[in-house]
Amino acid sequence: VLKKYNVDLFVSPDGYLSLNTNVPSLQVIHDLNFEHFPNFVKENHAKYLRKYFPMFARKATRIATVSEFSKNDIIKTYDADEEKVDVIYNAAHKAYKKISNEERETIKNKYSEGNEYFVFVSAFNPRKNITNTLSAFKLFKENNNTGHKLLMVGEKQYWTKEMQEAYDSCASDVILTGRLNVEELSKVMGSASVLVYASKFEGFGIPIIEAMKCGTPVITSNVSSMPEVALDAAMLVDPNKPDEIANAMSEIISNSTLRNELIEKGLKRSEFFSWDKSAELLWKSMLKILDDGKG
Image 1 (cartoon, helix red, strand yellow):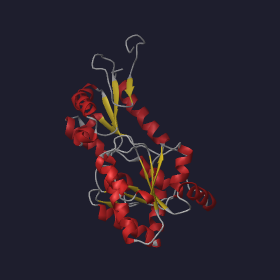
Image 2 (tube, helix red, strand yellow):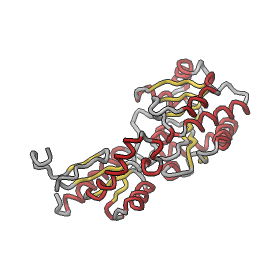
Image 3 (tube, helix red, strand yellow):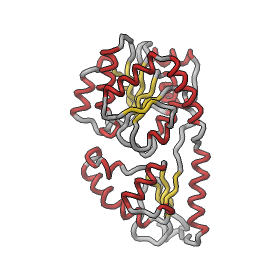
Image 4 (spheres, one colour):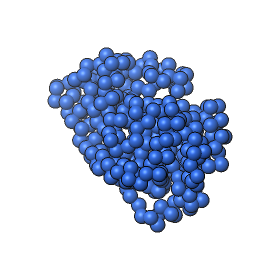
């Protein structure tokens, strides 16, 4: 196809390239989670990614990725030329914004029987730290006399026995919504007391920004890209310590000063990210290839 249409440049938003073409290419790599946590990916998929993505990275004329963390990871893991890798941050959909108290009550009545709730948003797989998130919520419930629920938005992509056991231990207070469209999800995010997003590994972590734009405080992990994205506008926790996650949940709920500070910092931090800015930087990456006479 590339030869047939005399293509000047091939842009791969998911990182897959042809190894049998001389057409210049811009490879987008979101993260290398499959290199660091291959057991979190289905075995055949992990084998394919770990075999071919180093080849794709060598083949690519340039690489774009979504954080400084991922850039450094690509350089180190694939021995890539630092000058070849551009950072283009992700952003959040414009639907994510603060909503009225009336809308919040409507959403809470719809999903959590009118109760305040924590929200988690992601595909359900081990990398997203489902087990420790559920264990942390159970600890929170044991240590706090509140009616808070845990709303988990997403699909069971890779559901394990450990996840099921953790879910069973607090199922009466956990609501699994399945996937939601962006308009509904933005309202669910904006109605939550806190976003709990203590993932084990991210190249960026878009839900962090989505929550911040909604004025929802964020708990996220102190590993990989998440500190870079959140800066001081979220509570950072060790994703491997459910008690630390639970303590952060308790602190935000009980400390209104901290809560308000996180909301204000989050709103300000979220302004840094926009898809318009991302599109402009991606275009500049494309022009670097074409202007170098390689297109």
